[in-house]
Amino acid sequence: MFTRIDHVGIAVRDLEKSISWYETTFGLTVASQEINEEQGVREAMLFVADGPAGSSYVQLLEPIRPDSPVGKFLARNGEGVHHIGYGVDDVENALASIGATGVRLVDKRPRHGSMGASIAFLHPKDTGGVLTELVQATRR
Ligand code: CMX
Ligand code: CO
Image 1 (cartoon, rainbow, N blue to C red):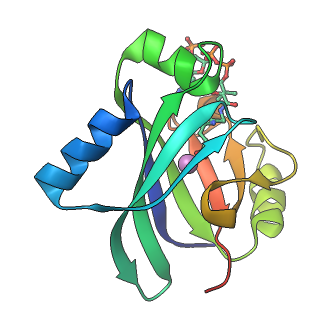
Image 2 (image 1 turned 45 degrees about the horizontal axis):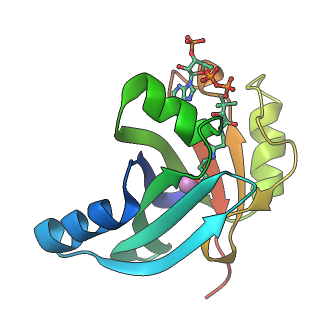
């Protein structure tokens, strides 16, 4: 069902500072930078590599509100890995088949994610403590 790791999401306090660190230390480059009001984040996708099933990224996430998922996570845990995003061909199909196993779906229907993707989250309490995102990227 999963085609690749699309991205790893990382909670940060200062987006510009973190972008600079990733650029300087790892030589990554920014593929997109957006504000997602619905998710409560300012975020950047840093390109890591192209693979046969598409590209993979690091997603840096700075909260725009303290009561957002990333705002609450930072207050509790500080900066660090927030979620993993798996690539899927069809996010609605993936949600239906994973939901049928009993895993709670945070999103019953896909929402808008970075770079035009359709995304949906699974509840971390049903996925071994790992917040998991399904990502259907736009066709290239
Ligand atoms: N990873 C693992 N566990 C997490 C977590 C995370 N990122 N975020 C919260 N939790 C855990 C908490 O530790 C807490 O556990 P305990 O009850 O054992 O203390 C529990 O989940 C509830 O935490 P909370 O802070 O009270 O948070 P909520 O219940 O309000 O929300 C969740 C949890 C998963 C529903 C919410 O974070 C959510 O909707 N996430 C999906 C959306 C999102 O993360 N958007 C930002 C990224 C956008 C993008 O990638 O594009
Ligand atoms: Co993400």
